Length: 121
Length: 121
DNA sequence: GCACAAATGAAAATGATTTTCATTTCCATG
DNA sequence: CATGGAAATGAAAATCATTTTCATTTGTGC
Ligand SMILES: [Zn+2]
Ligand SMILES: [Zn+2]
Ligand SMILES: [Zn+2]
Ligand SMILES: [Zn+2]
Image (cartoon, rainbow over all chains, first blue to last red; front, side):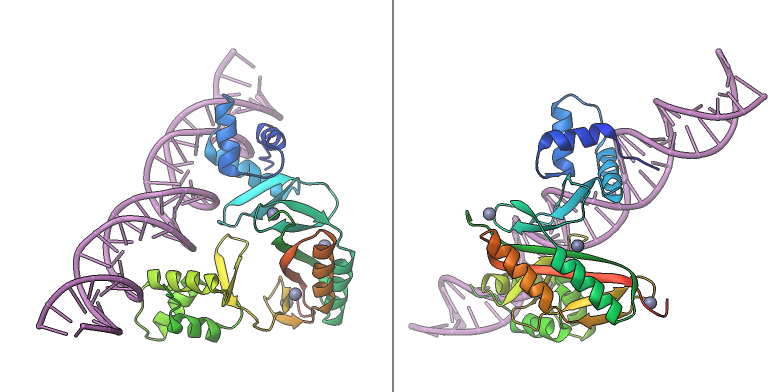
């Protein structure tokens, strides 16, 4: 079940910041690790399921992954350079909760992301 | 230069909310309009360049478009039956804005969705 | 009509991601 | 040590959105 291949995780760690599946794969190849692209994809998916890594989308649509702290949080992403800041989401937690209550929903979750251009772009 | 095909624009309008290029194309086909997929892609790109249309990414990576300035809103979706309610997003608008300001971001947008189980499920 | 630029769209190419499926690696049990 | 089944692996094929190519059509001024 847990296909969270540790070599993939450690490579993603080493990559620092965000990396796509293809990039992780190429990196491992360059470092002489023997692994298949399929396994990299599966490992990353698994890590996302286990909430060990975060996944986002680059502007061109390619999925990018990175290690993520345990705490639930949200991102502010720059559309220009891809820079990402973790932001505090207290307000949104309350909002989601109250909207759900108001409409009689239970077991509520949410997604939220803010994007724009950072000061450097 | 301006390939902002008016038929594509009007279809996107009619679609309401977000639609992908493929969806716009299928919609036009269903309505008996004769148009090529390539033209739909080119028209949407052009509309984005002219800032008439916004582009975002769905979770699966597909690009989705919507008219700029169309009433912005958020959804509460039931994981069980798929029922969807439009919810009021004032709190989240403020949150996104203040987070962006705090980190010096401009031209800010956001996505947010709440999901859970409705009272019937 | 004629020339020439822009628009169109079918088909091929691209590139990320997923699926298939045969093979290999693990692991528990005899 | 087998050995048998389950999980993991990866090469190759399939999928699917998007882009590119290129031949054809359309529009516009002369
Ligand atoms: Zn930036
Ligand atoms: Zn949250
Ligand atoms: Zn429901
Ligand atoms: Zn909003």
